[in-house]
Image (cartoon, rainbow, N blue to C red; front, side, top):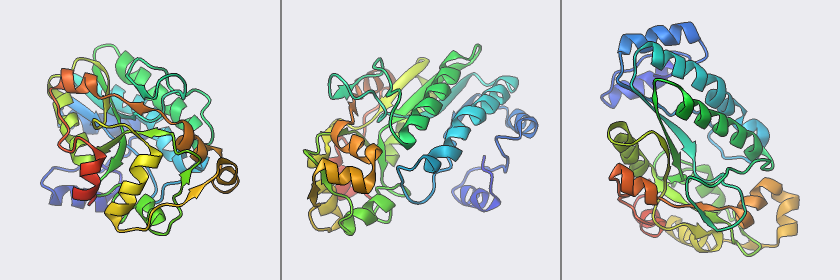
Length: 281
């Protein structure tokens, strides 16, 4: 399902059936989902712009999809008799306290700065809806930072562009821990979740959470870029804002142990060290 006919053509070209429908049109959405008669519904709705940004307005349309859009989609799924709903969340909004690698039981970052504050609220609402709707097996997949074709971390993505132009520095000690996942590995985990996952929440990340100071030079090397600069925290706050700095110095990574055990899933690219060089796209 897509809102745009142009996108529907891309979906058909890939070999799938496509329907044009707006998730905010609840009545039409229900008719559309009933016509498909799905056993399961996969909810990956986003409205992210081409360029990554820490500004609040960057995530506002996607936040609405994750709150109001999720309510409409769950209602349509129930009306159509769907057994299961699998929904996208993210694994990089854990509270920046305690250990550096988090499992699914750890709290989200309530009160996060900048655009991430609204994102946490919206994703928490999505997760509550998906896992708390009676009569539906709700599975939430918290993806790590996506890389590969069509992502911000692709060769032609905005994060790669900033690295190539040396506008993506290591901030302070670069201690913030990132968990990555290649888009194909995220897709494989999603397929696995359709069949065998118990209802609940799963981190979908690779095997090697790593601080910014470790992964960013490897990413630059894979792109053929010069090594990233280093800037102090105070300067980064002036130039890039608190949210960007918070990621660089306080971000927590995520453990994939639950997903590997309960989904029977293994990432093809076990580490970004391999994936950045082989499969950026």
